[in-house]
Amino acid sequence: ALFYLDEKNWEPVRDQRKLIHDTIVAIVMKKQAKELLPLLLNLSSKRDILAAELTLLAAGIRDLITLKKIDTPSLEFFCDLNEAIELSDRCSLSFLYELYEHITVAIEENKINANVKLLITKLSINAGIL
Image 1: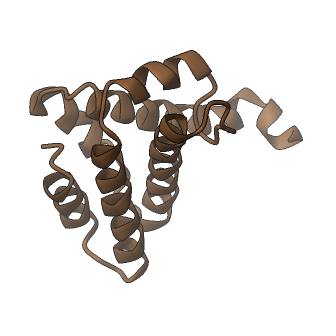
Image 2 (image 1 turned 180 degrees about the vertical axis):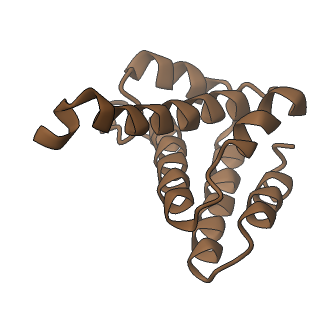
């Protein structure tokens, strides 16, 4: 905890969470490819960092799924319950399930040394977000 009290140590974590947050919002709001593609291209090309980003992405989607099923869920990614509820209401449960499934596949493929750029491309196409 003391490590992250220093602004220079906290900044990369904050930036990573903002990227994932913006990506989730863009996906759920069905943004056009010209708005979503730059976010996806900003995902790391380093396998270990990408694993953390995909895990955060999965946690965010999990929060939205949970909101559709439970009245008072315990959120893992979102800090603002009202924002999470609004996002959850904007898409179907089946879309969120399918997206979550594709993210978990991408996490597993990342573990077995898949090409990182192709992995993100495949995730985007298979999940129907591009």
